[in-house]
Amino acid sequence: MLNNENKSITKAAFVAIIGKPNVGKSSLLNTMLGKKLSIVSNKPQTTRNRIIGILTKNNVQLVFIDTPGMHIPKTNLGKYMVKSINESISSVDACLLVVEAGAKFKDEELKFIERFKQSNIKTILAINKIDLLKNKTVLMEQIKSFSSLYSFDAIVPISALTGDGIESLILELNKLAVESELFFGEDELTDQPERIIVSEIIREKALRLIDKEIPHGIAVFVEGMKEGLTKDSRPIIYIDATIYCERESHKGIIIGKCGNMLKKIGTYARQDMESFFECKINLNLWVKVKEDWRNRESILRSLGYDKNDF
Image 1: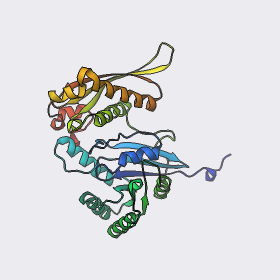
Image 2: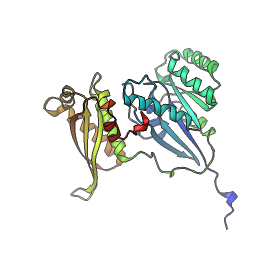
Image 3: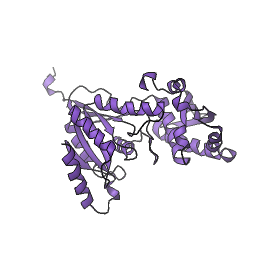
Image 4: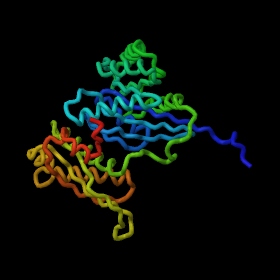
C-alpha cells in the first residue's frame, strides 16, 4: 500500500507576461516553452489575444498568459486588447514584466508598476535583448533604476533570441509557484483551440510579408478544418481560411501580382503548421473585404472576441 506522503508534491502558478509593444514578450514565451506558440513580428500590437502557454517541469507547472502590448486604443479591437491586459494582471498569481535592455523606462511601464503597487502582486522583471548591448554598464544602471521604482522578486537579464538567462528566469518563476494540483496535463502546451493557432500562424506570415499599416487591418477566420489521410495513408489536415481586410486596395496587395503574395503567405504558414501539428497540411486561402471590421462588433464576435470585451 502506497503512503500518500511519498507522492511528489506539485506546484503551479499563473503568470501574466506584460510589457509595452515590441519588447519580445511572445518571443520569450516561445523560448521558455521550447516551441513556437505565440506569433512574432517586428510590428507593434502583433499579439491580439491572451495566448496561454503551459510549461510543466519537475512537478512545477507555469501557466503563462502572453498579453498584447499596452497602447492607447483607437478601435473596439484596441479596447479589447487593453482590457485583456488589465484582466490578466488582476487574475494571476504573478506578473513577468518584460523591458528592453538599455532603454529608459517608458510611461507604460510606470503604469504597470503602479498596478503592481496597488495589488501587491509578485513580480519578476526580465530585461530582454541583452545580446544587443555592447556596453554592459548600461544594464547595471537600468537594474538600479528599476529597483528604485519597485521591489521586484527578481530581476533577470535575458535574451529570448539566444536563450541566455532563460533557465535562470524559469528558476525564479518556479519560486513563485505554490503547492497545488496541476491544472493541465503534463504534455499540454496550450489551451488554445486549433483554429485559433491556425489563424494566428497565417496572420503572422501576413504581418511579416506585407509592409506599412495593412497588417493591422487584417484578420483571419478559419472556415473549416478536416482530418484525413494521404494516398500513402499519412495523416493530413485540410484547412480553409479567409483573410479579411478593410479596403479593396488592400485586397489587391495581399493577393499580389498573379497571386504571388498570397502564395507566399500560404507557403510559409503551411510550413509552420506542419511543424506544429506534425503532419501534412493542405491549406486554401481566400481574401475578402470587410470595411472597418475592427469597429464592427458583429464581425469581432465572429472572429472570437466577446461583445463584453469592448
